[in-house]
Image 1 (cartoon, rainbow, N blue to C red):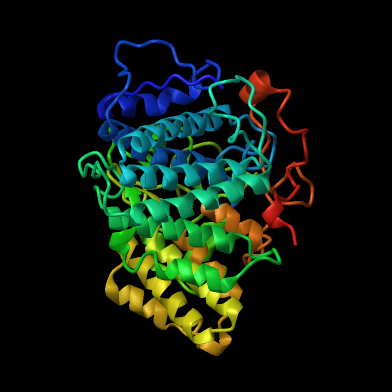
Image 2: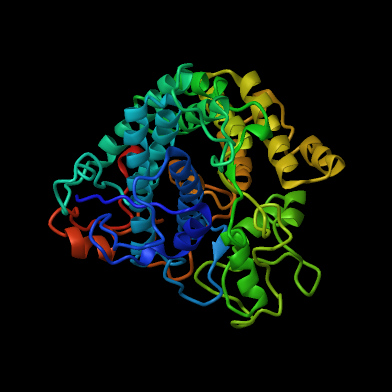
Length: 475
């Protein structure tokens, strides 16, 4: 894979972020551009890569949110909605361009003895590898950045997992060093503002997430998950998030499309019914921080595959992504991993290990942390938590309750699809989309993109049904 790295100032980077997926060049071989800077300094690379990491998360989340039924297409039979083979070339290319940037930042940092930058690059590389492996399966990596081939071979799904975990372990080692020759530039670090300590916590948070993801495998070790959790986040201020945009959050752009009568970003009845009291008989105040009421003063979702029952319109007879939401307003951050998620990871691992008291405390703390992040009033938060259906006591805590609450806490995050597959889609009321393309099976992976097949078809793995589980999704 021939790699010519070129970088830009932050303002120009934001423009490219919206269009990079349309590049038609071979792997990382970009056309000369007078606006691009060759051999950029580390602080410029830090701006580019931290922003792209958040955008990579949002791009994947905008696919997977239909699979977990946060979102639903307003038109009947939407491709993503109904598990049809869909071309995600732009997302694949975007992630690989971001990894090319990160590899170059790491190499430059190693040359300069900038251990902080090496560690940060490792964290973001691991995150991107997981996005590829958890969405598509196998993918190029070990052969992808050598500069010797335009058609890199593929690493297996499990190899990508092992590689990503190794990168996080390396990140922990590098970030623990105190002799970095170049310190992180706070103004250019769009995720953690130059805090080495914060990046170390995020490395452990992503490690905990990865170790917990293999809960179906015999190698799963709750103790290892809990060890990583203990070294990660303790407060919402630790969250890995990014909110530097040229104009606005990409989720806000989706919300504004509705106002402009461009149909997008409708909320699934699965999410809405969980929150409005239909499914569990308990009103969840977070719905008021996620969406706006319909013209009838209610919260009504759209069934996946069916489309808007009133026709393709925006008279607000069903609910959409909202500009008034903490998650999807113009200046709302893009969340990569949060303290609330870590509390639910802790709750699950502790419950699986037999420590019901720790699991119960973490479960309740996860709900509170997520409600605080959404901006729910303390009185409404406390009333919800105090309800007997939520505060069930340590002995009555179940995985079902943990997954139910974590489903809300990971709203729009691609990690929610990993949870849905680990949980075998057993959320209460969860049904297949209308006219689902996989018959009676839920989706477990997506197809390799057309752009990759055209460029590197000889190495792309043979087609498998989209109902085929990934390696960690098998018992």
